[in-house]
Amino acid sequence: MSENSLVKDRTSVNIPLEENRQGEVLENVAIKQEVHNGKTFYIESYGCQMNFSDSEIVASVLGEQGYRLNKDYKSADMIFMNTCSIRENAEDRVRNRLKDFHHIKKANPSAIIGVLGCMAERLKDKLLEQEQLVDIVCGPDAYRSLPTLIAEAEGGQKAVNVLLSREETYADISPVRLDVNGVSAFISIMRGCDNMCSFCVVPFTRGRERSRNALTIVKEAQDLFNRGYREVTLLGQNVDSYRWKNEQEENISFAQLLAMVAEVDPLLRVRFSTSHPKDMLDDVLHTMARYENICNYIHLPVQSGNSRILEKMNRTYDREWYMNRIEAINRIIPDCGISTDVITGFCSETEEEHQDTLSIMELVKYDLAYMFFYSERPGTLAARKYEDDIPLATKKKRLQAIIALQMKHSLEKNKQDIGKIVKVLVEKTSKRSEEDMCGRNDQNKMVIFPKGDSKPGNYVNVKITECSAATLKGVIV
Image (cartoon, rainbow, N blue to C red; front, side, top):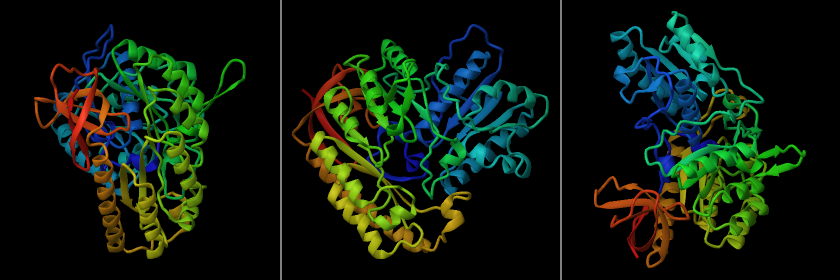
């Protein structure tokens, strides 16, 4: 998954459903277990899809110990926040939320407050000692230890485990699905990242890259389909670098894994996030073209349109390579939706280099984009090596130019769909009207339409009649 898709406070256009759930309370789920110990937990997730997926692992670990989910933090015995550490603003929001929870602890001293995930690993000392906001700090590779940490906290100790692992994939844990629609679900296929982009903190908070057993991934997808789910999203910081050896010592690539999951059932849609341009090779594209149920949508972060800046970011590709991959996508999958991440105002970026980013956006014409100005993160290569020398006002000005251009492109791309009939997987009732349903088409665009007889989990054909930069609207045909 791309480092920029981790950010809660990002600016975006036409956000896909699963990425538009930042900071939502995970609720409305019944955790099945034989024993209930009388205690409940509440959990909030911030940031990327991987954090939401990790929260489902946490719920499973706690459920096995008899804890039950409570959707009201005010009455929960334990309050957990699964956090994002990619930008300073994201961390500030988590701190502010922790202060809200601390008021609950003052009224109920026995309540336990815990921070999980990336921010837990990075700021353990500050959270535990300096700010005194939490009782438990648990990193992304240590969720199995939560019952022990809870016992320590109940005994009056500050409990912490932020050890990173080279082996942990949680492959044997069946996640408790914390989604709200029962139609789409995440499947984590790998953890960690080896790319070491100079601006990114993820390798330091999530550790080295390791891939999960492919057979357990397929089994999880089959189980979800049997339970009525009709879409899975395969998750990883960089899914294209997935590698796993089977019992015959044969390497299973990401392209092969995609095919294995697609063959679970033709009615099970398959998506994935996120790809790295250096690893987005033709075998993945040909696999996507071969299977109708692998969605024609790729998130391919560009970050910058200038080769010098890309080298300084340690992205390991240049503008020419990126455009080669875009050409391959358009050639092999002509109707593929493409989205991206963009960082503006990176260290030493000139106005001409900023214009290179705008020009690559003009060439590609992305369906949607996640756009940011550069935010220095302590501990990264960029923080150690480069001066954050672009004034904030300049960063914001450049970002606004990028946002305006993407808004224009998103609207143009959506207008091209007017008059087309698209296949939509129905997800839920529209937030704006009880008379409408919504779901996504193959290219990951949100489609709104009168509900008729459609229900979540159904596939319907919708004729597009109008659009905005963010959504398509139409009628069932």
